[in-house]
Image 1 (cartoon, rainbow, N blue to C red):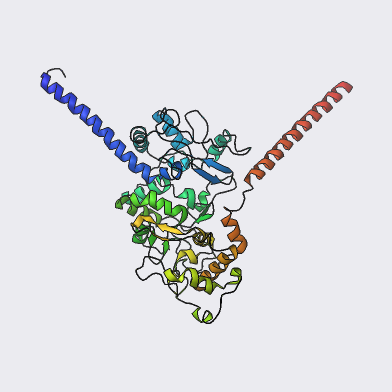
Image 2 (cartoon, rainbow, N blue to C red):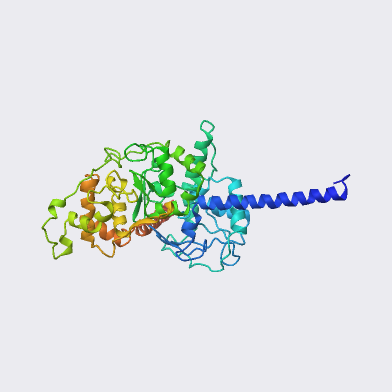
Length: 462
């Protein structure tokens, strides 16, 4: 500041301080938006708990993973993390203490984040999130998955740690959408099927995957199995409101994603996501002989109800009787939906048009809410009202009249989903694999020792 008057020097210093404060504020504001886009709150906040304090149990095929506290608490959260340690956890799955994270935390997607976005996230979490000094119960998985170091080998096989690189041959809108879908929004975490080692099958990107008892559907550009027949405005409406008229409505984990994340994104970002999704290479399921949202038509079986008494055994009720008793008052007699359009038609609806019917069963059991559109329109769940047989009968009726005739719902399927899904055999398979490896090593060592002894005997005879 040589040559400056004291007043001018003071002005420059104050201007510099203001710029620093403004930059920090902008970074924090950006960080909050990025945290919303990444839907961090969904996994790191337990029902009724404080934001980002962790404790949410996340069921996985290898056991239940307990979400960690990611508030800036120095005793229970990430308050002692440096920015580099934060980046390593976010993009490489490595905690500050060097322990490995499980890919239930989608670091395989967050690896694509830019340095600037990681910096903004770090600034927001450290300065604007309220610290919570309560540590959740640690994750305790069964052997061998409790050996976190094994994730180092998993990462070598399946983690692509390269940040997102824009495609110069695509528009800025497309590149922004690709960055969000592949990175922050981590769409592939749910919508891409996984292999036996629980890694995403990159050759089937966004072709559909199971999320506990729910099924995240195909969202590739295929006209029948995916969203190829949807317009970009349909996709934007679905992400913003939780439903696209005449096509689908969000339920289960997707409804949470809309409520916590997608509805809060800017119109430009929603448009960018839609632009990108429309170009994702098509993944076709041969069973989908027409678009999954084009099946069915208005119909009823009212004639079968007139003058017929309900059976004394509820499990012997017909699909028409169950529909009349539990569905028709809202979806109308022929499944055409409510008069005001608030409740959807049951035909031309992906819920009844897919051959994968878990979501239809889960909607009947758990219901559905659409808080994103401000009306809180919802469908009640009937898990406490209907038996497994009744749910299977009702679901089959809905498919027959309003959906894909190639689909099916069984009593065993309903029973399994009501219980939380089919048990996983990954732990048993992993243990068997370890036994096989150990036996092979023992056999190899024994063979080498035997050869050594034979060589020694031959040398003695010589």
